[in-house]
Length: 396
Image (tube, rainbow, N blue to C red; front, side):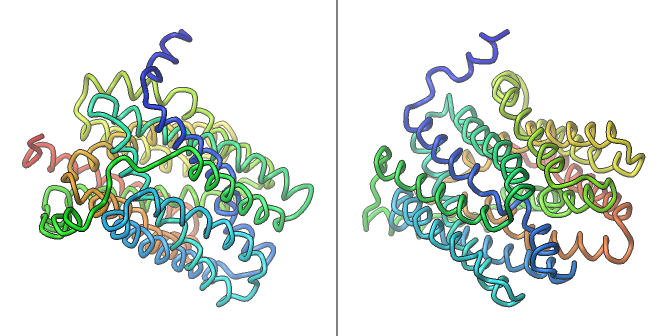
């Protein structure tokens, strides 16, 4: 059994392991983000619609940062982009705690997330550069495992810090861990593919991703699933608090369950299914599990139903995210990978603009039950888009 779990990790490049360590430290330290809606309502006393507006600024920052990250990656290379994002991001995390008015925090979160999300397209291009075609999906999965292990450690520790100290301590830890990740990157990683003026000119001649119809259809489906998934990050903690009456520490443990399961079983599952099944089919299956995870929240508020919902959502992640990432990386043409991976990342950035207002509006006016039904419907539409893509124009 242990052999089956560990075998997929063999023969992954050293640079991928280092990048995973950087991602783990960075993600574990990003404790403010999962509790941001609670921090804004409980500490700064913002209304739900003010929280939605802050999250919209978050989304615009993510959108602009991801776009800028793709541009900079293709122009100056992924190493400089990742390094600059981590060091400047660490400073900005520290400063965010001193912003307390609505407009201060809205502008501050926009600037912070712009800088932080410049990192994302650069990281995906780095993964492609450090890995081979044979281990690309496993490399993506290892990075995701680092993200989810960090997501498992971070909320659990954050819940403890909030319960025993205050929200302010989270900003200090976010800043310190982001700077530590930057130091590790500076010391142990390097850029393999060099960016020159000549190949920068070649990048501009290539077909941009927004003119790739197949890719943009895929983009739309992932965007819809992104709107649904962001409810897990932004609205679900409020649901646990207001409807299920869980405290911050228990919410942290429940969110940590998601990351822990992904850490334990995602790599063996991905390794097995990567070799046997079509990637688009696997993404569709993951979205079906997502839809079920939200739908059952309307059936009962008993704790076992809440846990089953979290398990369904977790396995939906396991099947949707790694294979959609790999599809985007393979679709990217060599040379303008930054543009393709930025466009892929912008699915979630755009979703962050739409999802908070969408979710908060439905909760504020109609309640959580209507939101969960609406999110289920979005995921069903996303499934049909991918089914049409698979059986009409998918040719890879």
